[in-house]
Length: 622
Image: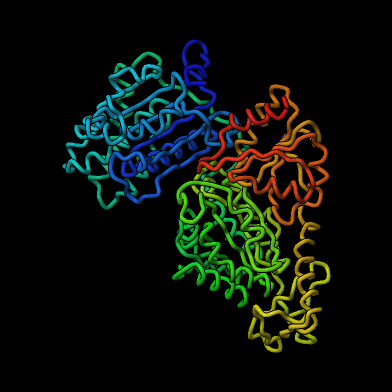
């Protein structure tokens, strides 16, 4: 449905749009991520619900005009709940031919297309793969085209500020942003304040960008635009009153770790090595030293994992993060954490693989690695975040499990969750129940092998505490004393007790609930991780059509909730959408002997709502 088809007239005056998908696309140097973020901020301030999807190339700076160097930012906003970045695009801003040719397929028929006509030179057209200029050959007749000399308009606008041509042209993203802000009646004040703050030491740059923003807005107000191009109003969403902020998954995860440190009364040592898309977690935490967090950029992934585990041995909360390739390198240290039974948080922000793969694209292909990618029988808990906001609570939960059961915990995120953003109803920290850690202090009959009889957690004793001197390491230990033991029966017992401890976590986690729909019926769509948004919307739309379908979303990947098998067996069919070749579906099939059906996608892009809808209807018709 295009913007035009989505419009309802109120008293013949205003155009009311329920929801809209806007995408900004251009060269990686055109500032599309900045443009998108500013538009997102304005939309959040206005009061719409929203979700975003930044999509950028792996190259730091690809050749200008190259299709593989196109950077895009998509935002879906509306007056109802929004859980994905949307499917088809209603408004596409294409700053050059490469951006047009790579994104036009997603623009709905009749959608609005805004292009910078000045960028459609013969050289750029050839580089993008066009034989003829699409602005002139009728290719775009099915869309409402706004072909504007944006570059020329910008250069003229910023002349009074004495910028070189190079810096003047860089303001064209703000000009375009001003036009789109006019189109949807977005406030500009926050963007203007942000520009003036960012370029406080370079007022001529700040003033030029502000002038470009205002000029783009004025162009929309004064130009004779084609029929059907006018201001569209998207009503504010009905949301729970309170304090909101726009947050990415990375930010929410960082704040969740900080909150967990305060709730557990533990200092945090975050050790990592830069890798896309996990690096931003280090960037965020490094500026939060006031919350008793130490950040350490190690020389490699192995050193980072070792430093984090060493911090846990010393009585801090060790945290390390990476993406798939880095998690592989950390594997030996993670296994060591299983053997020593120390708390350790391992964040895996998944990306397209294998190997270097698709560094800036998203995927869910590290589930098997998280569950089984260690030495011997070294089971550990795995927990997955489902949305940007969910990262906050998942981080707290991961830490709670790690310290309660003295175990490493893998927390799964992915590139989509990490980089996307959504409004977050900031919770009251006082509503969270503290779980302060109690270190072993009793020297009488102490051994590092002592365990809590209920959780089977090994005691956590700070090294150097008088009377509690002890040694731990990767060699197998005696169940009774904690000393090194090569006895066959002891190794069997230690392997069994470590497994029992992890399996027993299922008694302490919540039962699995149905997110949307009935707890029995014809079809359940079972998801995990960032598939939440499209699954939820797909199920919601199908239920509006009267279809018997429910949504179940799993947070605790291992051990799984104790009631999950019984819940799944109350449905005639199970459909499992995943951004991999079917890893969770195979676990469901093998563990529960359920003939679950798969829906797999490994394109580096998240599921679209229509893909889920079509799969639901196909299953119900089968």
